[in-house]
Length: 340
Image 1 (spheres, helix red, strand yellow):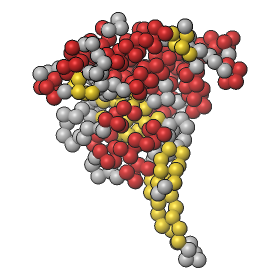
Image 2 (cartoon, rainbow, N blue to C red; image 1 turned 30 degrees about the vertical axis):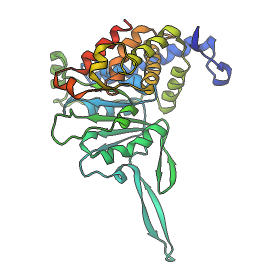
Image 3 (cartoon, helix red, strand yellow; image 1 turned 135 degrees about the vertical axis):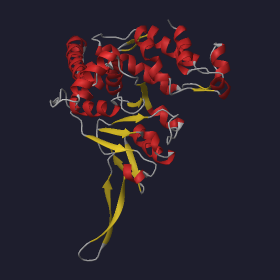
Image 4 (cartoon, rainbow, N blue to C red; image 1 turned 120 degrees about the vertical axis):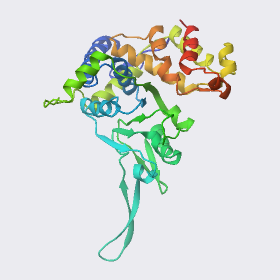
C-alpha cells in the first residue's frame, strides 16, 4: 500500500507521465546548487546537503558550531544561489522584538492629523539569517515563534503576511560559551533540523587558507529563483511514501519518548521526547533527500540519515543522565538500531 501518491495530478500539473522528467530536472538543479555552495563552503558536504533538504522541505534550519566555521557565509551563499531576498539580524543581548518584527511610529501630516504607520522590520524577507540567535534574551528569541510557524506576524492587532517562500536560518554558538541563552523548547521544535558544524578536514582548511587570503573573488550567480524553489517544494510534497518508510519513522520517533519507548536507556535518561512535528519533519525530509538523489520515492536509508539532525534538538536528557556523561548522539544511535 502507498500512503501518498501523485494525487490530483492533473489539477496540480504534476502527473505520472512527466513525474520522472520533473524529478530529473529538479535533481540536476539541486546538484548545481550543491556544487556551487560546496565550492565556497569547503569540506562540509553533509552540512550543505542537510541545508538543501531543509529548504526543499519548506523548513527552518538551526546551525550550531563555534564561531569561524562558515555558518554566516553558508547562509549568504545560499541566498545568492537560490535568488532569494535575504536579510540578516545580528542577535545581541540588547536586541528587542521590535528590531526584528518592526514597529509603529506616530506621524503627523501637514494638516496636523496624526496617524500610526507600520515600519516593517528585517523579518520581511524570503531568507532571514538570525546570526548568533542565542546571544539574545528568550523574549527576543520568541519574537520569531509566530512567524516561523504561521509565516505572518501581528502588530497592534493587525496581521502582516511574510513573503513566500519564508525561511529562517539561525546560527547558534554552543551553550557552554559565555553570553548565550538556551532557546525555548517551543521555538526549537519549529526548526526543521539542527545541523552541527564541525572543524574542516586538513585539505579543506588548507584550500580555504589559500582561497580566502588571495586577491581573487568568487562570483556567485543565481541558479534557481524563488518560484523554482517553491516548485521543488511542491514536488517534494507530491512524492509517494511506502508504508515501510512511514512505519520506520513512527517507530524511531515513538522509541524516543519515555512514555512509549521499549528501550531502557530512553526510559531512564530522557526527560522529554520528540513530538508529532518530528514525524512530520522526517516524512518531508526523506522525500526531499530522495529528490536530491534523483529517486522517485524515499527508503529506510533516508530515514536513518536524517534521524540525528531531526531529533537531536527535539529531545532532552534528564539531569542525572547529563551528570553521568550520557550524550544525545549516543542515545539517538540506539534509536536507529530499532529500524536498521
